[in-house]
Image 1 (tube, rainbow, N blue to C red):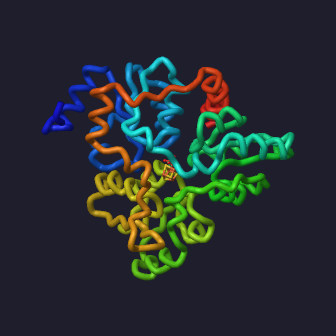
Image 2 (image 1 turned 90 degrees about the vertical axis):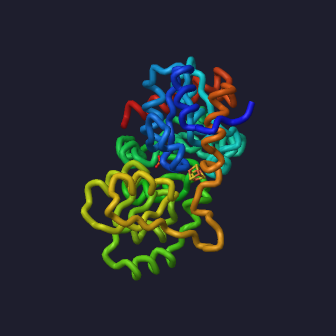
Amino acid sequence: PPLPTDLVAAIQALKQELNAVILAHYYQDPAIQDVADYIGDSLGLSRQAAQTTADVIVFAGVHFMAETAKILNPTKLVLLPDLAAGCSLADSCPPDAFAAFKARHPNHLVISYINCTAEIKALSDIICTSSNAVKIVQQLPADQPLIFAPDRNLGRYVMAQTGRQMVLWEGSCIVHETFSERRILELKAQHPTAQVIAHPECEEGVLRHADFIGSTTALLTYTDTHDQDTFIVVTEPGILHQMQRRHPHKTFIPAPPRDQTCNCNECPFMRLNTLEKLYLCMRDRQPQIDLPEDIRRAALQPIQRMLDLS
Ligand code: 13P
Ligand code: SF4
């Protein structure tokens, strides 16, 4: 059948029909954020997925997020508009190689950033997100050797904040590694009163110039609680939609990519989801997220530990 002319109305109608909840990450296209029931960072989205009483969770985000929703709430139907919406961080950590890495570091506790596959979660002791990584590491016994995976930038940031040594898996996010120190310095020179706010997935040289570092929700909250009229925002620019909406009189400057001929500061995976695909996944009840029960159970434990510790 042809697409309805009013996709938003059609999505709202399907939401009623399916008793569905639409969860969206801040990096989603603004049109998707506008139809969502809840917009949040990885931790907020996980909590929503765990708590919801809806029958269907429509996840407007990337695969590891929808998979986490299914792990937490397995009786729900979890839909992802495009199954190809992956994540370079999750891809940078294949389970076989990670299991071998883990075996080379016996006695280490494994802390994994939620941006990883269910198989990696199943090989981990505790999961964290960018909003609770520091807090979680601080709660671990000082003499406990630690592995942190898969994001080396977040890992390095957590080490600097906690003074703990950790063995890092060398993964990274292609979006956050596109920002350059030189371009941030140029922007700062052009806007001397602006505050630089950055996501901890950025490289050390970029984070050095940030006035504030935090998860997407923390960055948004920072702009709510600080009076500056200009912010240089060093993360995926999807987050600017909520910042601009809440503060129409403030100026939010998205940090540009190193190579200004591309728009590679936008996450190519997040942006695979469109309003059309959101509608179609609800209409067709697919693509659905499914995973083997043994992996799901093993992955649930470290996620549950995170929720208990944060
Ligand atoms: P948060 O929204 O948890 O800060 O994560 C950012 C991100 O890269 C999600 O893929
Ligand atoms: Fe993964 Fe980076 Fe995209 Fe987040 S922004 S989904 S970490 S590739």
